[in-house]
Length: 231
Image (tube, rainbow, N blue to C red; front, side):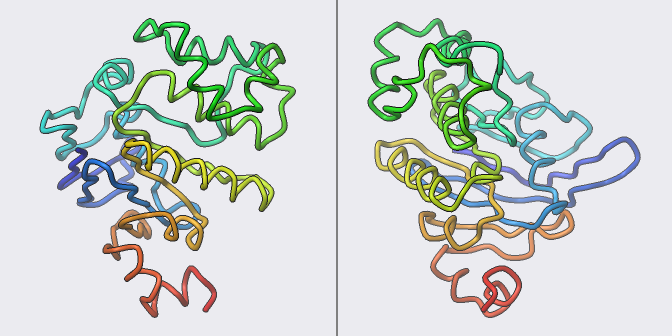
């Protein structure tokens, strides 16, 4: 579904990603792992057209999408849950959901589907988004992205800043969405939890892909265990 090859990314004259190659097949959860500063968010921003200083190939369902604008990508079926959630804090929960559906003019019935997945969102629908707890805001950020009816959902650090309880809740939600047929690229620092729910994974270090493979194999890799799992 998503196929990236030979991707180099720059911030002005500074190169931050080198020769990135990864793919996500339909129906998979694929995790991109790495420490702070490894280049994970730079890659996500480039996929979604937010950083256009790049060369290489980014294909979605066989179509080259490098250089397209974010709204064009949403219409094709890609949706992003951004790092730090990026909600509209002075708008209500429901208004945030409405904005998520704006690009495709969602029908009202879509709200019931979202509310069934996230009961807390139903309870808070009239509340200002900025008054929600961190975990509730993350649920809303995911719900807002789902309003666009994506084929591929990209989540950038969804567990960032959350309590251990909400980390488990968020990643369980990711697993449930995948079981319902949604393809997912999960960008995470929480290596253990992310690999437990993923089919495959890539590890990004200093702008380079250094490891890739089945999630179960990465969890057994001695170097990965030492560097990321504290084992």
